[in-house]
Length: 328
Image 1 (tube, rainbow, N blue to C red):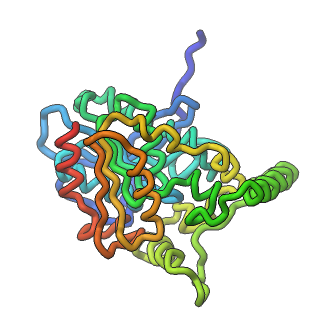
Image 2 (tube, rainbow, N blue to C red):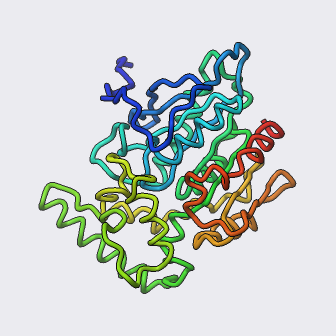
């Protein structure tokens, strides 16, 4: 078997370009690792200072269409301040990670991204390989549950303000488009777009969060705009802050329900959601499928979807630390 370099050489910025302040309590560096599909992923690694023993470790990703300089990095840095070695990574085809064409999402590959992060953490000299957990935010909350259903090395999973991206694409928000006819029309439109993309030699983008809010915009659109399009959360590499995903990314999500085997997850799971989030039904319904006394649902009073992106007085970090210590 011919040897080859498993990792692509990525161009990684060395400047601190996060949407949150740098902590003086942790060490930070950029790292890379590869997944089973040969895609090299970029990550920020955070580790507590002045610790010599092997650490419990956590991989973080999300929200869907965000980058590691946004919410996932904040989660990772904060959990490192609490004593964990953490990485926040850009999923395949996004941010500083490799993979072409750009801005593609895949239920399979993005679940694999979490597993590749576990591969990386498992072999670090200062990580206890028996104490590895993951955190998925928004659409990566669903991917995290799918990874937990596959990967027995994952001892504990937190899903924060979760979306099931396969459900929302196949059935629409609140399952309002849950019919064979509606899905057929979506498939027709997406396959028509495939031909256009092939002829053009480029992949059309679906667009990120709208630049200008219509007066009649629903609250959840305003909620996203307030994060992705303002100084609070905007980032130049963020898909949601800019041009969005490829239109045809939706195709594979229509036919692949990622939570099909969630009831077989034996490891611990904590679902966290805001009481007033438009997306809260995803966590409530997922919780209803989980089995075992190591599964928890935590509803944050009055919180909306993006409160759990970056509001450190709302995100229940104390509970998260307690959960990981208990189950890892």
